[in-house]
Image 1 (cartoon, rainbow, N blue to C red):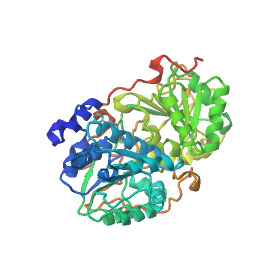
Image 2 (cartoon, rainbow, N blue to C red):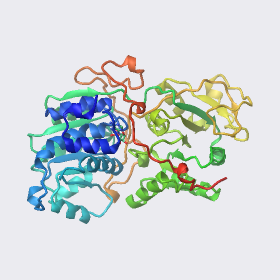
Image 3 (tube, helix red, strand yellow):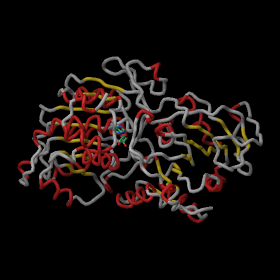
Image 4 (cartoon, rainbow, N blue to C red):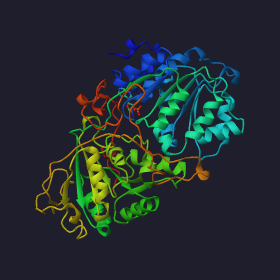
Length: 497
Ligand code: AMP
């Protein structure tokens, strides 16, 4: 199927062709006709499936009647509001809106917290049709009367489950109360808890449910490995592994805390490995610069917290290293979804100390795989690492394929396991200083009910496609992205070791 068969106007087809897309992804095939027909929609899809174009293209198609080259602000009212939980996600959605609307005289902007409001106010004054916003900052503008929402025809709530986890739902409800009742609304979420369903009931009218299989289905492209290691030796093991990676290969390293994040990046720098960190205490500008430096290959290792890394569109990474395991198993799936994309092979390496074993057990249960464990000689775990497992794994001198090249390891004999994608993410709260970033899940007490209104079971995101009825494979393999240069191909700006 081609984009033109979906009934999009020529201006959009041109933009899609310029983006390098040859055919719609599964979510686009399903969502575009539904949105073009004017229906409300509840979408079970995540970042990486092409969902942004799935809602942006038909939304622009429907907004095209408002397209105007007039300079008068009165001719450019806010017609579409797209809400995203984090600045990063909002920026990414905005980039997509800009790209797809490039041949239409429709104006768009992105407003988020943590930065000066004045430039945003100037933009809004000029007149804007499409506003991509984080909820907190949007409400700040509402309060200051610098945005008028009375003409909004489209509302998109992206990553509703993350909004919930961040405590944004009251803000969303406040925003809903400000919008005209007669509007088209779309809600995207990776999971559908009772609270999300309550919100959907309030926000959507006779919604059509569309859903695509998660990227986090078991994939053969990612090899997972655990290196049991005592916590005191982790930093040195990390430097050791990175040094034995292919020359200048970039690595995304995940840590548990903001403090640990900066410290680890400094440690690597001191050991001759170009590294920087990204976490919620850094200013938006610093985060954007660091991310750009990583994407362009100026830095080789990016150390990130889960919160700061959410929504980052980092492509084609050969490996992700969990310096610490995440406290929630879903975050593991989210983290490793940064590698092994588009059918490429990827490595998910985890450095696990004795006190993290229970997190490892949770992860293995969730992804339904037992991850191979290998001790790297010289980097032993705490003596009690294997105690609770009952069967102590044996060390053997074999190096395994999943370990960095040249890195000597002692291997326990477990089959490589694989899984890719992401499911549930807990983003940082934004609004700058007023609402500091949370590094941990605010609460995990609620019991999600995974059955959607029409009976769809969202609790099985890691099943094989055949086990999920009514779904299509939306794995990264099915996306034909335009190639982005990877850093080390650009001349290897990272230092050699
Ligand atoms: P999203 O899930 O919206 O974050 O999109 C994930 C990535 O897929 C983005 O980098 C898009 O540029 C890309 N993408 C979206 N639609 C297509 C398509 N039809 N063909 C190839 N790539 C796409």
